[in-house]
Length: 227
Image 1 (cartoon, rainbow, N blue to C red):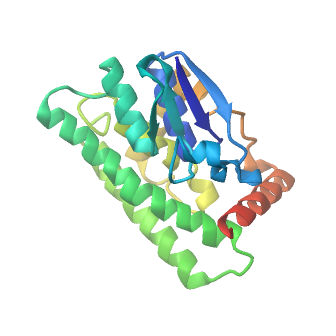
Image 2: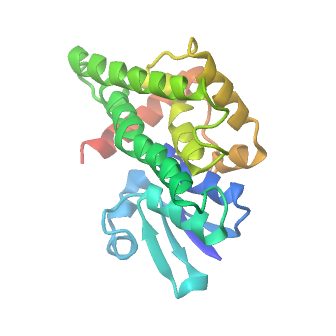
């Protein structure tokens, strides 16, 4: 059994969607980010960085893994799925996983901060991160013009990038014109495991359609990023 410490964020979904795709039994421990639970001593023993997600593999002497990408690699290699075993195939998946971790995630995260969370609207910063997020979306679109998935087969690279890209509206980044990216987004959204995974630990309301919920979500996030 895997203990999954998580919250309803793109990085959290990376772990839960992966677990669902791999059909792994896991227990969800919701971490209340608004109450700064992730900074409490007990959690820092699991994740020294004080971030979600993190797991504890109870079948392996309570082995703890932190950092979302590391969690995904561990689970994929534990089960022998969503990650090729040959060196070139494995490298390809890790390359696109690192693309998300070093590019898509940080750029969209900063777009969220300046576009949604900061009370002051610093337009050059908003433009910078939205434009860079859009450029990275175009990289994905170009890749997906050549292949059904980011690599030879559906993998953790697709899961990681999709969990972030699916929130493009919240970041204020337009991408409906990127037809290959849209085809890929829709294909993953239709996977039952992906749908289950993005409802862990709770289902997030459609913030684009609920102004009050969006305002409250942004307020909670603003408090967290300013700590």
